[in-house]
Amino acid sequence: MTRDDGQDRSFDDVLRRHAGLLSRIAASYEADPALRDDLLQDMALALWRALPNWRGEAPLRAFVARVAHNRGATHVVGQMRSPLGGALSDDWIEPRHGPDGHAELEERRVRLQDAVRRLPLSQRQAVTLALEGFSHAEIADALGITANSVGVRLNRAKAALKSVLGEDA
Amino acid sequence: MSGQGNDWSEWGELWRDQPAVDVSQLARAASRKRWRMRVIVALELLMSAVACAQCLRFMSITTGRWQVWSIATLVFMLVLQWLYLHVRRGTWQASGDDVRSLLQLSLQRAAAGVRLARINLWSTAVWVVLTVLVSVPELEPSRWQADPKLKWTLVLQCAVNGPLILAIIVFCLWYIRRQRARIARIGELLRPDPT
Image (cartoon, rainbow over all chains, first blue to last red; front, side, top):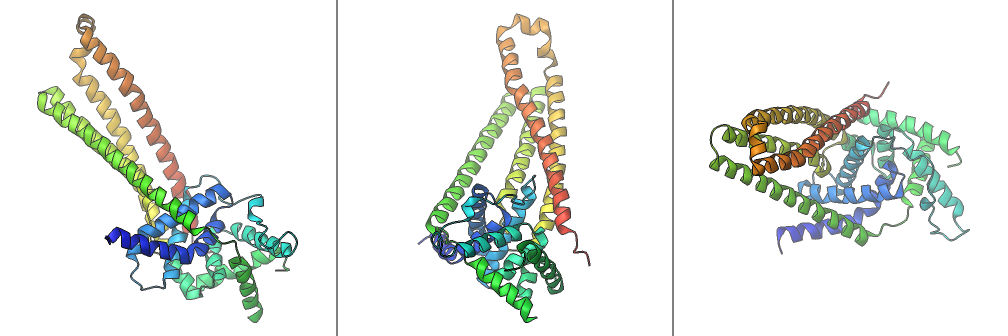
């Protein structure tokens, strides 16, 4: 087995385990389905390139999230137009739970995604990691800010989310 | 506090309850991008190598002013290739560092990109002036009117290099504008949180 084969196999395994995380982070940066898919592929590619540098000093999940956010931030910087999604796309509403069963749940999920996307980038990055279950310290480490700043960003984001979601969430 | 925790855990559950990704399709798409990137780089390097080889060949078979011109062309091409690699680097980067460090690095790269594009614009101007100065004897109407082969060579050079130089200038101006917009945008992202 060559080094590349080994790297590819390890990458496939990591990708399989963290595809959901990548997908959700990509969705927080891009509302347009085609651009979102493209960004997700770029994140996967960035992960493939960055994975050999992972030395296990941080949990793999945190490393994956960091690489994804770095790619997402690069995407935002590269966008000349505003990265915020604007109108919601119907593509977001997949009838996974049947036509009537959990439609309300789906709608709440879509509204949450949209609300997160509308946050300023600094808050959005902290929020997506918080929603993934990362601790304040892990978020601070991933974003290169202090835990105190994480608390400030999350508090502001929470107020904004409550106001956008009308707070039945 | 528990109310705050409840909000986050409730939103977190909702957030993580998203449709599953088709991992094999994603892996295939990423693999395709990987290969496309490798092929493009290989082609770009091959074309540069061919162009450099032509310059070196021209340098070895000419003397005097045309030899100086060959050296200048070689330097110009290397600077141009450097810019292209710089442009491409933005799409290659994959950083495991924290987001703030990446943004600061991107800021430095964008500033370096502007400098590089300016160097390219000036080197293009210098190359054009040098080419015209070196070609002054051949540009004499009495000379090219009497030599159909020289006339054809001059027409061909103008037809090929004219649009190429225009494209390089337009590209550099576009690139400088784009990098300035990036610098402004990164500056906004790096601004500290208001207290």
